[in-house]
Image (tube, rainbow over all chains, first blue to last red; front, side, top):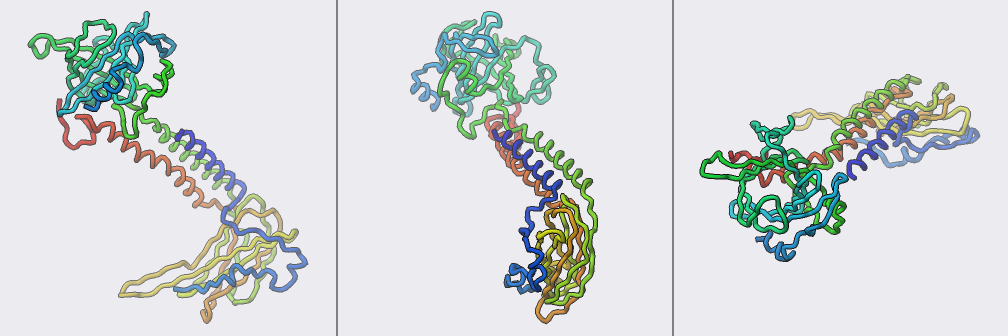
Length: 60
Length: 381
């Protein structure tokens, strides 16, 4: 049972690794956004809150 | 004695009734005899049950029940077994010496092919090579130490399920966890081979991904890091099905720089945002130099649909800090080594746990043996 489970899990894992690599998937990619061309022309539209307003101050 | 009280509870009743028939390897065997034998060692009595089976063409075999473990035992012709340095050799296969003692008949029921009597004693030496066990029984005759009859037999480990199926029995007691028979096979052994095969397969898949990955530098540019300014690159071509690797290098010292970027698809509404921080600190504390962080950062992004893209970048730095030149580069189709090692690591988790359990299993197997490879001092015999 354990051996069978290991074998199936391993095959699935290697398969996932291969498919991810082949299709260029990265699991930690931030979500894509859809910004219409009309909105793109508005100054400052790309400023994302997640970075600039996250409170990051850096340093030791 | 635990064993005798157990027998009393069962009213010394054989688990397999006399006259019962069972099937092994397509042959019908009839249980014609039941015997209880024991070995005394260091004041303790270790007993087991033996069922004598008979088949018209093949003759006699034994079904041995010891400590809830079953063995199907067949006699070997004389001269088939040779002794070796570590044990005994049968058809070129070496068995390790496991135990020796004097077995005494405690109880007999049914018919036997020799005249058995309670109290009859034989010298027994067991050799193992799981799932097989070689047993040598020496019946001393006369006063001469070398005189006697030697009988070899070969036991094969059986699961209780097989015995239940063979004799149509139900609810046979299974060995408790940690109760390991001398020749009980370690049933997870195959996992090591699968581990090896899957590690090799992962390496092959990794190699394939390295070969098909273009690793093409699509964009590289240096920017004077001016906070609050936005920079837009010239359009560049990206291909689908290839991941993206973005590297940022900045000569920061005791400072940090935040990079916020967006990949903008020229022909659709798709945008792919990302953020990175480059920070590096160093100094001397109590006479020792220390440093932490890095002057470069890398991020991987999933493949985007093929087409022309622009890169928008904005920077933020430590308040009042110096704003150095920042180099940003984008490479497509880069094999991510971390994924490879994550797969290898996950694949190793179960086999490594099995390896520890295997060690414990073997240790338990040899616990009652005088010839244990785990003991530092061996008894010779």
